[in-house]
Image 1 (cartoon, rainbow, N blue to C red):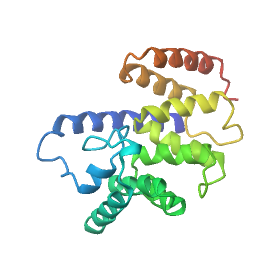
Image 2 (image 1 turned 60 degrees about the vertical axis):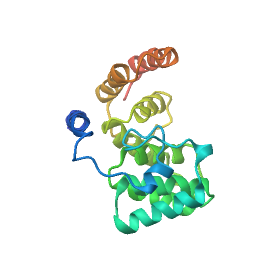
Image 3 (image 1 turned 135 degrees about the vertical axis):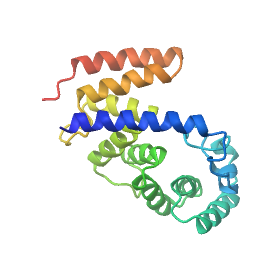
Length: 207
């Protein structure tokens, strides 16, 4: 059943992330590129260097570095996401969406989260189908992206995805919130949000 497969995938993703964290300081870690140093997002959980705040991004230099990085390593989903990020900042919305979707299709959870956000926020050149946002956020949530787990539950319980074929059920969403509580820190406002979402999910009827 779909719910079981999502929970299985979520557990596998959590295991793989745990294992990766255990070797991240070793030789298995991918070498950082100039693209990483100029364009990594501070909130990307899979960045391999310190992130660069939006206001501090040198857009022309970052674009050149990321395009060069992808020329040397075609299809790298992290570099593709970072190129998409700086394309957006440089006003190249169409190119940004294409690159972001390519990274998302390759399974990069930050890109999947951003694709959902672009669609939900009705950004230019993104899909106008809210059910596409549901799909991307479900994928990102299953992969462990906390922001996607929060966004998914909130949008489902608020009715934004009514009419969509949901990729996660109520049990899956309970797992998402449990994960946020376990790994999201002790921030006061996050605790309040989790309390509200837990209450909303308890009252939610999937039928």
